[in-house]
Amino acid sequence: MAISKKKVDENDLTTWPVKKLKAQALSLYSAIFQAECFGSHDLRDYDAMGKIYNAPKEFKKPDYAKYQNFDNYFKACEKYIEDIKAWAKQANPNCPESGKEITFPVGDGQARYIVVSLKPVILVHDDTGDAWHYQYAHRLTAADVRKEVKNLEGLNKLFGTRMAP
Figure 1 (cartoon, rainbow, N blue to C red):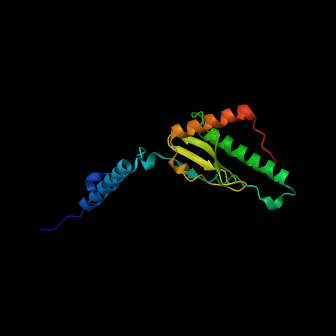
Figure 2: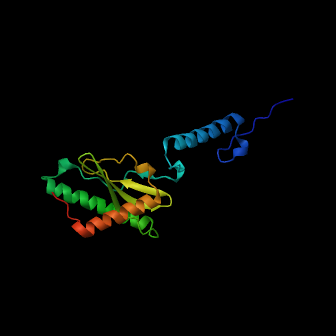
Figure 3: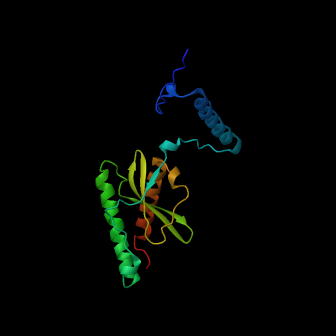
């Protein structure tokens, strides 16, 4: 009697081999065990977490070497970011947070991201200046992004948006 080999469909668990199913179950049990043992109450599905992308290729990042001084470079960077914000708002006009910026303190500067979407969470990394990355940006949920947008808007109301050169 010949054993038939079914084609494995990644989206259909009924076609997965038993060995793979056991490995997936073990991985899930391991995550739950670690969460219970180490006090983490954050068992979000990785697919529901944020995706971080570079700016679309049609936007050309300013090159510092082409500018005579820092002020001109800074203005070019701000225009570059404003263009990405406008693109993000146009790409997802139904999301009130799209086109807004969120920041996180990192090192001697800030990691900056532009919100494109909340379902799913999609951010564009601001790669100007030192281009810092926030180590947990990929773990941001829609609620986290909404909170960060609200926080930054509140700070801007208090202190203004002018950045020191």
